[in-house]
Length: 386
Ligand SMILES: Cc1cc2nc3c(=O)[nH]c(=O)nc-3n(C[C@H](O)[C@H](O)[C@H](O)COP(=O)(O)OP(=O)(O)OC[C@H]3O[C@@H](n4cnc5c(N)ncnc54)[C@H](O)[C@@H]3O)c2cc1C
Image (tube, protein in one colour):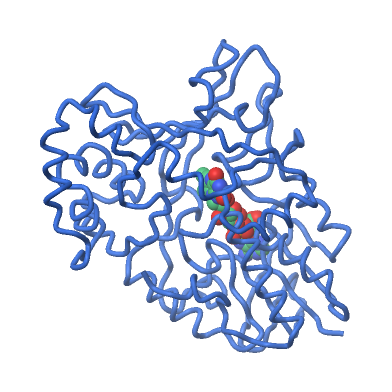
């Protein structure tokens, strides 16, 4: 019997617990500091309206991942979803991400189209500002990217963000309104309590310790201390920031957090039909709003909207800065064989969403089943620096 420890009970830790529980001869323990599993993806309620911390929309290009989750918690197709941005300088709403029809309708379309034609490309881009200006020109960058990125990453200058291939929405202008989305499966659980049943099933599958604090880590020896007691494992799957496992010996990895405000409006719907999110790329402090009932289909005369403000509260967004990515790699390099690090904080990659957590858990469970160790971050796509 091999003893396995999973650190953290968010989507990555819970997916690992589900998948590893299918493998014979593993004795699995999951440790979570809070009182519930699922972290920000867990459903909460305000005035009876179900919501999560931010949208937590299931968007994937991986059919295997979708089929897996859909079998356990049936998912509703949301492919009609539309995202829009409010651009204050034009007092207009455009699609998000932007596409050529929007550009043609802008008051300064002539200059923008000229800049797009003459854009020098991204081959020599050193930071996210070069990357976007090289893709779409200065005017469009100023309109929709500059302020949004600065508030998203809490920086005064976008030149500080020197990795940029992570942008999940892509820096290119799309050809039509659906071009960004038609390649992905867009879904959300049918159940009123969203993803919760998926998380709570973990209690039946493995030994779960909630409200539990790990006092000390000795990762080299795959050992942890809880209540002054020592526990040793054969395999560890970590889903929290890797600096925590090594007493920040190379310094603390920075993250951007979020404050979420929930607001009930006195109308059945607030956003136009099919609009799930609105992005705000101007001087306002918030980045995004989501109308939850578009996902949850909650029936009510009122509608709940979540408003996200970037802050330093919580370890939600690993910084896309090369020096910090290198620092994270130094921590990953300290991890011995049979210690894996998955999930958004665990890999220290922004480009890890719910579907990616599942995909990573699938990969490591394959490795564990086959007794293969492919490095602490198992998939090439996440191991690369970008
Ligand atoms: C506001 C917001 C909106 C998002 N919207 C979407 C979306 O629409 N679609 C999408 O696919 N993705 C979305 N994401 C991203 C996605 O939800 C995350 O990538 C995913 O939840 C990461 O899961 P995880 O298990 O890696 O980490 P987490 O969800 O952070 O879970 C980590 C867990 O570890 C626990 N923990 C922390 N420290 C310790 C410790 N020392 N010991 C034990 N346990 C510990 C935490 O309490 C937590 O439960 C969003 C993220 C945010 C922040």
